[in-house]
Each structure stands twice: as structure tokens, then as C-alpha cells.
Amino acid sequence: MNNLDTYSQPINELSRQAGQAVMEIYEKDFAIYDKSDSSPLTEADLAAHTLLVKGLNALTPDIPVLSEESNDAEKADRFSWTTYWLIDPLDGTKEFIKKNGEFTINVALIVNGEPVFGVVYAPAIDVLYWGAKGEGAFKQEGKQAPTAITVADVPPTASGWKVVGSRSHQSEEFKQFMHKLPEADIIAMGSSLKLCLVAEGKADLYPRLGLTSEWDTAAAHAVVLAAGGQVLSMEDMKPLIYNSRKDTLLNPHFIVCPAISDIWA
Image 1 (cartoon, rainbow, N blue to C red):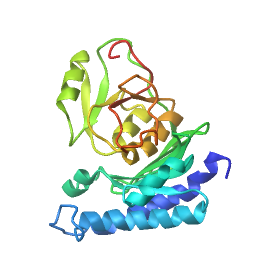
Image 2: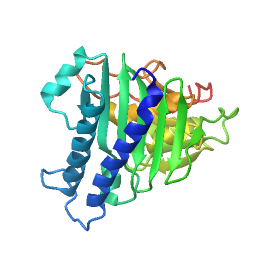
Image 3: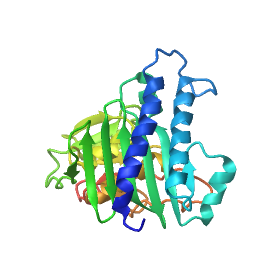
Image 4: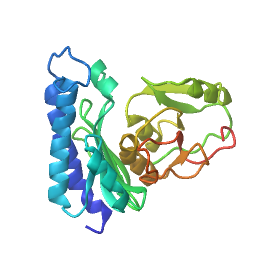
């Protein structure tokens, strides 16, 4: 499979299957919300993880898989990988617990530190995003035909900005950053759907000034890139790179945008 676009159909279908497994648990009336071994949250996470890993191993047996649910040995092995799948079986655990529908299944292909293909599926609202390097980005709502998506043009002044922020994790740093855009409309959203809003042009900016892990962002990062946008480290305004820090799988603070603007940079 040298053509990245050939991954779209099988990975989209696999993500939908994982989403269906999560929804069977999500739709139950449960009252245990933590991530203990017996909680519905853990049950949903592991059900999606098992489906995704099995499906990816069958589709691409020579490409390893790194998941949030991988063990320590598997996470240590990643330093020898130049190409691997990076997945988050259930991104947006707080959204899952709140039952607001804003959680996703994330699948990304990483090649030399760059997310070159990604699928983000939100099963509760049946919305699917995907993108591949050189092939463009797409969105499909339910059974409607997929539509191509692109990032918006950068607003020319400090007014009129639409900035997406975390529904569950707005930090003090985020509030300080927003002083640069005092007239901006803030759109609250959960999980990796925040990056997807920038990818489809519904938001102009997503500054993430709090902790995230690499599996939280990789799939939507690929969609943003395929839609013409950027995901930049706030440390140096250079592209966010994966599998480059041996001591951690945490991302630095980053910003998602169509392009760098002097208004906020």
C-alpha cells in the first residue's frame, strides 16, 4: 500500500467498527465513571483497542501499532520504528463520561515523525474525518456523501477570529493567550474534534496550552495537514514531531492554524 489513499476505506470501516463497540457500552445506563479495571470507560477503551489492533495487524502485518493501551515494553520499542500506527481507542474520556457525544476513535500512520494519514471518528454523532498527505482531507456525516474540507483563510485583523478551546481543560495559559484576540468567539469542543474544526474551516485557531499525549493528536493532526493547515510547537513554531522524545509521549504546547499570523505569534 504505497498510495496512502488506499488506506481510507479499510481504516474508515475499522474505525466505525470500533465506534460501534464503544457505543454499545456508551448507551448503557452506567454509574461508574473512573478508569478502574471494571469501569464502563475501561471496557469501552479496551474493546476499541482490541478491534483496532487486530484490524491493523491484519491489514498491515509489517507495521507496528502503538496505542494508549500498549504496555511499557511496546512503548519502549517505538524508538526503532520509522513507520507505525498510532491510535487512541477512546479520545475524550471526560466527554464519554458526560455523555455529550464529543469523543472520538483516532487512528494515525506516522512516517519519520510525521502523521501522513489519519482518521477521526466520532461515533455518537456519526461524523468521520480523514486525510492523507497529498490526497486532501474529507468529512462524512452519517450516510451523506463525503465532502472535501480545507482550512479557512487567516483573518486579516484581530477581530472576527473563531478560536476553539477545550470543553474540559481550559488552562490559565489559554486565558492569557486569548488577551491577544479579545474579540474572538470561543468555541468549546472536546477531544480531537477541536483540531478537526480548524481542518474544516469552522475555527481559525486552536491553541493547546495544556498537556496532551501523542495519540491524542496524531490522527487529527494528519487531517489538518491534509486540509492545508499546520500544527506547530509553541516552543519554536516548528511542526509538531512524533516519536522524537525518548523520555515522554507527551506533546509540548502547540497551536493549530491555517498559517502563522503576526496577530497572535
